[in-house]
Length: 370
Ligand code: SF4
Ligand code: FES
Figure 1 (cartoon, helix red, strand yellow):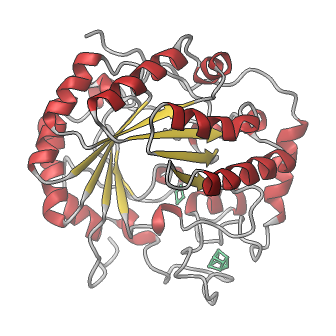
Figure 2 (figure 1 turned 90 degrees about the horizontal axis):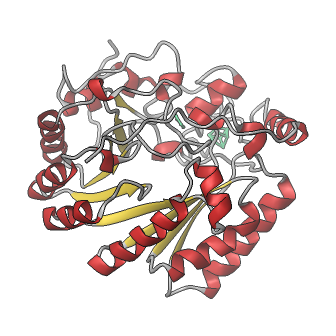
């Protein structure tokens, strides 16, 4: 086991992946290819213990996610527990399966915020991307109910080749649906996005046009809607501080109770993950080998080790470094200083020359009937 660092500041946020079940099959889903089964999901009492431990550690925000978190009928009970612990709760939902009675129960339980995903501003295209006929209309109705109930609403839209021409239209749609924020996030290539990379990758000109259009809207719509813009990695020169730095700001708990520093951490071989079934959240955050593997800067190789941005971006994404540069301790290849930076553009170009075929949809899991 790695030695615990002398002091590790508490995380700000906890992402609770309550279930991997989901009626949609988005081809860029960041969930692992091997999904946790319903039988393996943590029961409500275990989740409540985790939320109490998170609150005691100083966590402020809990993001209730999945899969589709509304697939769990005990969701209002979990929200009420978080509220009693003083935690701010954000529901990250596809909207499909979020019934009117469930929304009312969540309101009564004290839910603070709803983040609703959309796949496109064009209904037919949105349904194809989601792999679910009628999804767009359901989301539109859910957005209406969410706003009517008085929840602050954020719309999240993932950009890729099939919808990138409508990036600005999605900002307009979020505004029309009553959202206070919209997140325009260019696809990140983990989980299900890897087998679909060839179909999802936009070309550089499309990506640059979409970025410029959304940045113009940021100015034009200031005071009406907040735009969060997550830029595409494959055409960038500087990496993002993935997760705000490994083991620095937040942690993910999987449906079965494994605690991960990021959603793709299990793709890094040799890391030892601890579970909330066996350890307290506080012990995991401080001592679990997976959290200490890339915490801080001591693990870095050149060029990160002596770079003056090493405490700004923490070397970028460990999972992308492993996947493309071959070692999780390498600089994220998004960085122009990475010896394999060129590989990003080559991979993007490979995608563009691949004939467009049907997506490999995320394995479908049916919602449990109410
Ligand atoms: Fe960031 Fe490493 Fe690139 Fe420096 S060399 S900018 S720390 S990824
Ligand atoms: Fe794992 Fe970025 S997704 S560190």
